[in-house]
Length: 345
Image (cartoon, rainbow, N blue to C red; front, side, top):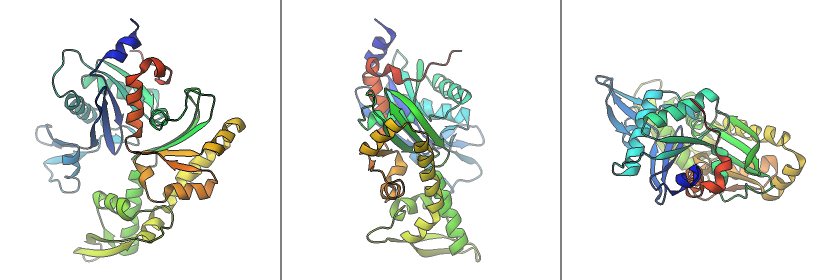
């Protein structure tokens, strides 16, 4: 029996979408079993983990000096090797639910523009966290598989995966990326834009969690049929006192407009490098948006109006990448071409 046949029959294998904002885990035969923020809270006294995921995220901006709240991934790659290893170990153990004699093989989703050094850091972190073998798959390919696109055919499939730290755009044909563009701009940048805008225009200082909530509730990239408002609590920059202001969706759209324009410019640059035959396919089928950033209201309309192409938000865009990697787990013989070549020691 070949390696891939053995790999395909292991029931404790997992696929991990190791994202800047969220980490998702897919377990073979069980589907998506974990969806947690990529945040770890660590004691500064003994370096022990206090909380991981949603519990740790709730501490952001509220932690004392004795507790460090860390986001170990930045721009889609590992910024803190040790904490990433702790995060992965916790998630792999939780996915298994019980200790197994055979350690799992793991597929990890990574940005298409990742360097060899960054690939090795991901692989080593997963191995130290308890994986037996580690294989990598690029996020655009995984998202295309998760979106049911015919990537194995001689047909241009264009996907844009908008994560917390990066936006990955790729044209895929015959199971490979033909052209791609990776920009280190994503949902986290939109949050920072909102913080800076409110501080400058409204003298209101808010934290990252509040900015994310504003983005999700009233943020939009294109004018809404009915504009929204939201009461936002923060600190007055001048007086230093807590205040509550009513903020509109028009203001937030202005705040994030420059970053949205950067994302669309990345699409334009990729289209300029795309072969005419593939461009014809894209013109017919359109661009598919995946990742948490695809949930921003009106983003599909904004891109459609700007590049004059059909734009589709896939169902469950936040889980699309890990579900695609999960399909590779379920049928490795079919999809073995899409795995990134293994890095040898």
